[in-house]
Amino acid sequence: MLEWNRFMGLWHQVKRRPTENQMKDLSQLSITCNVETQAKLDSLNAANMQIEDRRTHHWWCAGMLPFMNPTPAFRPGDEPVLSWTAREANGEFVGQVELHQNGFGWILARLWVKKEWRRCGLARLMWTMALIHAFERTEVVGAFCDSRNTPSKNLQTSMGFRPVRAWPERQCELLMVNREKFAQYLKKAGLPAKRKVQAPGLSATLPRPGLSVPARP
Image 1: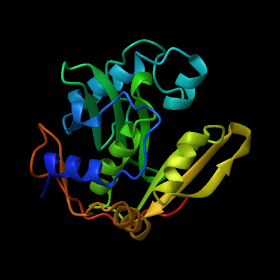
Image 2: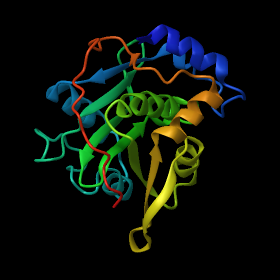
Image 3: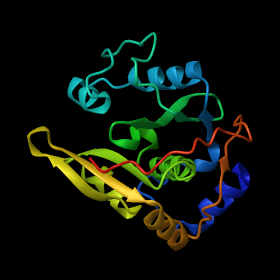
Image 4: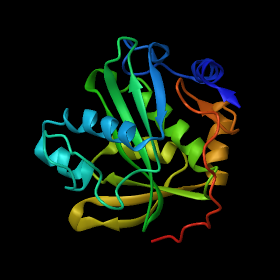
């Protein structure tokens, strides 16, 4: 078991260069893994309600959520297996990410970080935590990326993701990373690959279904 405080200590030790946002300290945050449906829905709605640009919102949720309005329930097949919520000490919501299993395999999706917390390593931290969990269940994890979003694509490729499919007309790409490449990323960063990063409020045990490696789309 890799405890939250231990992981955060390692995370800060291995950062090799200053982040763009020097005013934010990730140690101020708590990141909770959401297992229950209502907690996952609350996290999703918290992010959904803060996206004010229609085009960004449509890309972020693939047009599946109401714009600037909470959704009362997940659509069939759209509930994530797990999600992660980042909050400040005062409880203010600052970010989330989800882990899905669908026709594309195991997918990280709907990453959102509050503007004031961008470029400080929060997205990378949440993705790292989510991937550690994901690779307890599968050998390959994917993520979609807006082809125009260079920072997002750079983040993914730096963690071992590689493009496997593109939809030029939608300016969309699917990237995937396997267990070996992610382990190389963790080793290079000086982080352990053991299960699991335990944020406050996370149960010590989670289901581990025996699932086959998803086929590449």
